[in-house]
Length: 343
Image 1 (cartoon, rainbow, N blue to C red):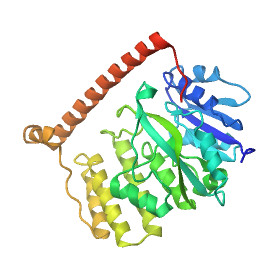
Image 2 (image 1 turned 90 degrees about the vertical axis):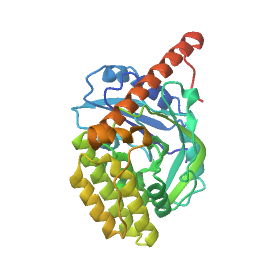
Image 3 (image 1 turned 90 degrees about the horizontal axis):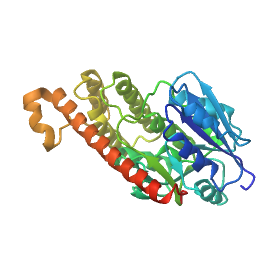
Image 4 (image 1 turned 180 degrees about the vertical axis):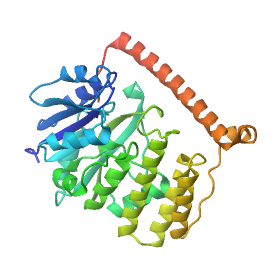
C-alpha cells in the first residue's frame, strides 16, 4: 500500500472563495504518494488564476469550456494515474490524515474492490464548528444493505468520504453528464454495486461546506435540475431492483420515491404521475407531500405552488443570514488568531 499513488481529483467552477483552502487541504495530506488534478469548468471568476498559483510537480491545473461537474470529473479521471481515486469538490476539505487512515485499512482487505468511506461533518466557514452526526451508513456494509438503508432512511455519504480503487472506478463507468444534480448518488450507486462491500474508517474525516442553497445539490424550481433528479432516482431504483427483488427492496424504493416526491410536486405533475405509477408497480402507493405546519396555512391563500415558493424563500433567506453570521465570526477569528491548519 505504501507505493500506491492516490489521485485527488477536483472539479471547480466559480469557486474563487474556496479553492485555495481546498487545495491546501489536499496538498497537506500526510499520504506522500499523491497527485492533485484540478479541472476548471470554464469559471468566470478567479478560480483558475488562484488554482494555478498552487501548480507544482504534484498539482496539475487544466481548464475546459463549461460542461458541468460530471464532465469535469470525467476529464480529471482521464488525466489521472493513481491506483486510488479521491474525489474532492472545490469547496470541501480533507483532514490531513484522511487518505492515510483509509490506505492503512486497505492492508486488511482482500482485493481491490473494497470501497472505503469515512466520517463527514457539515460546516460553513468555521471548520472547528463542523458537526459529525453518525448515521446507519457509518459502518461496514454490503453494497445491497448500504443502498437499502440509504433509500429506507433518506441517507447519503458526502462525495469526498469515498476512496475508490482504479479497478473499481473503471468498473463503475463514467459520471453521467446529463445529471445537473444528484449525480454523486447515481454515480456511487454504480460504484457500490461493482464493489465487494463498504469498509467504514471512522477516524478518517471530511469537512463538507454546506449552505443549503445555490449549490448543485439544491434542486429548487429549475426544470432541468428537476428532470435530472428524476433521471437519477429512476436509475438508482432500477439498479437496486436488478440485484435485490425482495419485499424489503420494493418497500425501500417506494419510500425513496415518497421522500423525493417534494422535488416534483406540484410544479411537475407529469413526473409525479410517473412516480406514482412506478410505486404501484412496486406494490406501494404515494401520497401528496404536505407542507410543514408553518406554511400549510398559506396554501389556502396562495395555492400549493405559491406556498412552496414562500417556503423556499423563507428557508433561503434564513440560510443566507446564517452564512453571513458564520462568515463574520470566521473573519473575526482570523483577525485574532490567524489561519490555522486542519486537524
